[in-house]
Length: 277
Image (cartoon, rainbow, N blue to C red; front, side, top):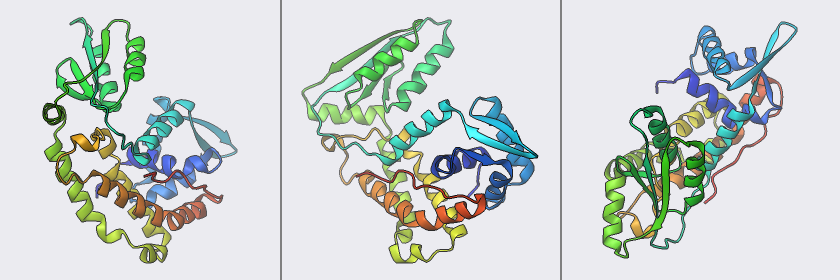
């Protein structure tokens, strides 16, 4: 696996270091990244960039530099963990949240930001300016609209009253064939790691590597998967199986991986949130 230093830093803070008292020494971050064969100079460059972008604050204690999460990054990590670790299998009411926007041609940055925010909330693109979600996200659309006064954003709670047509709409808004194939590949890759007794005996360093690998591979799904209600899911849809597999392996590797991180930074690391079915 090709490790990306920036993503590794954010994942380490998201899954471990944020639960270790709020501040972490640069030397400890560097030692942790060395486990993934990331050189010290690369760690410093990436941390410096993240600080300049407003994700971290720093302070000096003697010759040590301590890094702490900003409230903004903590909020993003909280939202990201909510998406990764909490699944919504709702009964479907047969209605869609439809977001329609109009943006002046001169405001391309606003248009791009709207697309990013709608995609972040799980909307799928039906047409260039029309997005759908099978969940009640009317409040979220109104909040997005309030953030972008230069755009006209409408939120509709609507339906077709035709389940087959609704399934076709889902197929037009999301590439379900590719998403399903990727879920099945994830299951094939990690099924062998679902071993309670075996994972309990793993070396801490190995457990950290495998746990970071599985969360790095799985975290892409919640931002692609609309969490379709059962009524709209294709036959033998693998999303739930992949989610349960991820939760089991992540939990099983947790004690050894967390203990290894605690040993490097010299203080206890609390347990973060686990999968909620």
